[in-house]
Amino acid sequence: MRWGWTTCVLTIAAGVGVETLLPSAGLPRHPDYGVVTSVQFLDGPTLARLQELGAGSVLIDLGWSLVERTQDQFDFTQLQTWIDQGHAAGLHIFMSLGDPPEWAAPCHECMPYDLMDWYDYVYHVIARFRYLGNDVTFGIWNEPNLDVFLTPDLYVDLFNYANLARLDANRAARLGVPETEHGAVASGWFAQVMNSIGPRLLPQDVVTVHWYPGLPGRSPDLTLYMEDVVQRVGGRETWLTETGKFEPDDANQAAGIRDIVMTFNRRRSSEWAKIFIYRLYGGDPPDNQTPYQLLRADYSPRPSFDTYRSIMYRIFSVSVVAANGRYLTAADAGGYIRANSDTSGPDGTFELDDLNGGSLQSGDLVRLRSSSGAYFHVVARNRPLLANDACGCNDDSVFVVATLSDDPAAASAAVTLQSYATADYASLDGGRAADILMTARSAGPREMFRLVVH
Image 1 (cartoon, helix red, strand yellow):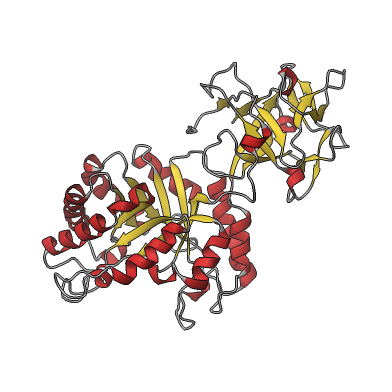
Image 2 (tube, rainbow, N blue to C red):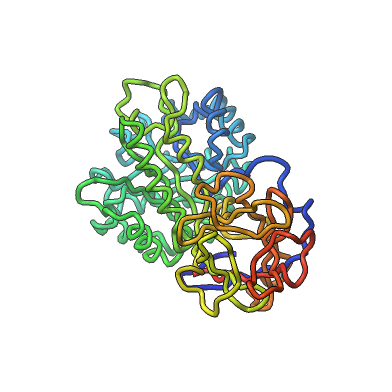
């Protein structure tokens, strides 16, 4: 299910048993959240940290200079071992293709001497990893607009040969283009390239761009930048494949990462589908990119690692309609949630955190937070549901949202909210106060709600 730019109604039918909904342990890996690292770090302690982080996607450089050091001699032996380890760990792998060897181009960012050599490299990579299916995406060149190493016309030539290689090696493969540094939008480079290559993109292909805060002459607002990109490409799925915070100070870096990721969490359109934080690890302490890292040289996490891990969820603004046709509010001083309003209003507009990320689907784990900042909280079985938890950190503030509706957008369908901690369903009390009680062990008419997503 995909959310558009306008207000929509999500409606979900009840009746799913507890045993089919509650996960056996922990929260799922999030494919829409990623991190940038190097291919050799899909191994050992860095891979373990990557699994601990919970990100479901990783961007690695599978540069031409790694694959074909000598012309016509392709070697994937070690590279494939690392990639298979990452794939076995459940990661979607974005392979950035580019970085020509010395024999193929005058510099690592420069146009190849012979585009047929470029075709051969792309063909061999895509053919080699065909077995990964939809779990791999191939990026075409890194920041081709940077320092004008590639003019728009040259990039279009690169894409055309890469696309031919894809069609010959595996037509089902997904390409990510144009992988631009975010000055490409303001300069017109992005529009010129997309106007040329857009008609040749296949349905599975994605638009990929970069954005970093605080760079002069660039878009200062991430939301506006990504909305601009999505609109320019006609709503095609778009990934922010590089972003991050260059900051030696741990607290400042964590705050910067939080701002970026929370912007993604609150995005208004699912066409902006993935984010990749630069970067997990570089390995070399003198590296001038070290202040971007989520890990220290000894593999221990910086605070930004824990910050990123803790905020991998999608945020929606919603109102909730109970079985009596009235909106839930959380205006009571004691935090009592009641179905007592004919309109939503500020007291009846809530933040819904979809802890699974992505689109809101049946079986997802969610939190709900009132306009006062307090999370919905199950105090105990057979007690009223309250909005009085400032943290929302524990299972008693997590709910399972469930549906069996054939048409989740049908206005007649309904939602159930089942406590992750007690397995009880939220239920409308029949009394005059219209409290929401945590009393039901199964779902009936009073356990049906409707979410209005703003």
